[in-house]
Length: 144
Image 1 (cartoon, one colour):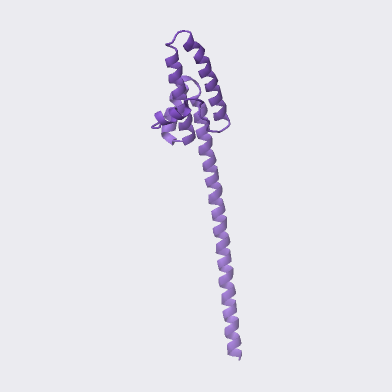
Image 2: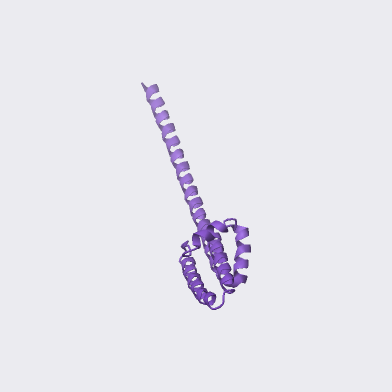
């Protein structure tokens, strides 16, 4: 019987050691996973913030749009690409309306209102299509 008791005690001790090691490794793995998830979250926030910044830069005149276009080619943010396409469409509309005397100039005020709406959407971090032609801008310029 003492031999059985020694065997049981050895087995129990070995089992407890193995269980404790497994728990320790599981805790280490959980800590590593938490740290990796936290770093991933910081990276996602940085990328989304960059996309928002690029979208806002695109709203600043033609030079701002060109700078945003170049910046977006390096990082490719879907949010920034969305607003680059929207603003290219608005800019082309404004350019074409300049060739229509008087009525075109009045309609350009409407383009200005659409530009302000686009800027507000970008500031809020929302993808808002420009009314009337926004969906077409996304389709026409999808390669950007």
